[in-house]
Length: 131
Length: 167
Image 1 (cartoon, each protein chain N blue to C red):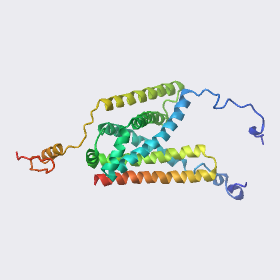
Image 2: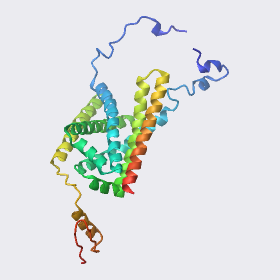
Image 3: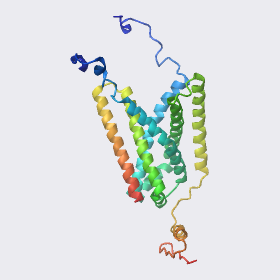
Image 4: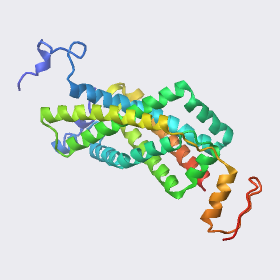
């Protein structure tokens, strides 16, 4: 198999090497993973306290709790941060263990769409209850 | 041009099946396993919110599941995985900042993460078990709360039959 850069004899070595990385944009991924991780430290602690607080809460209590702006805003932030963090983490796992290019593409695309659906489901539900 | 090394028949180092993984390596793979497990927790979280948005019946299904022994086991695993991933994630952030790279400190932080995850999981469940969680909605209490919040404005809740009084 002839690699793409072998045709470009006129290119400089740097020009040939560019874009040949595993994903083409590793730094953004790495930074976003850390950013969401930092965001999730306080959000996760708040979430655990909330879950314990909501033990045995019936429908009316829970919907009233979620209607409080503070709780609704933190739940939306938590949903966004956790889904984004999960997208990035799941992507790395797939890239590490799936070696068939076609299947890897299908799986990466599928899981991203799945997480997008989870994020929309969470945020829509929070807003529907809260508003 | 030097000969490429992989063409030669060189001896292989022991592979994963025979190599005894050090604590740091085990904790690394556990970080990934708990991360993948937490995706299941995220799905449970989504189900919970969608159910609340769908109505009392759907919400009750979630509550029944969480209250069952299997559901409690799932929640316990969820909390343990969350604490481990959270604490080990903080350990990773320290590495990202350039700390804890000495083997000794990497191990110490590793043991601290394991101990912390166990202690926090136990503490959370002890709190949850001892906590009555008296959050069943009461129309009367709600009417009284509204009365207090509105600073003495008369509110009459027909369901509760509560009567407000002006101060």
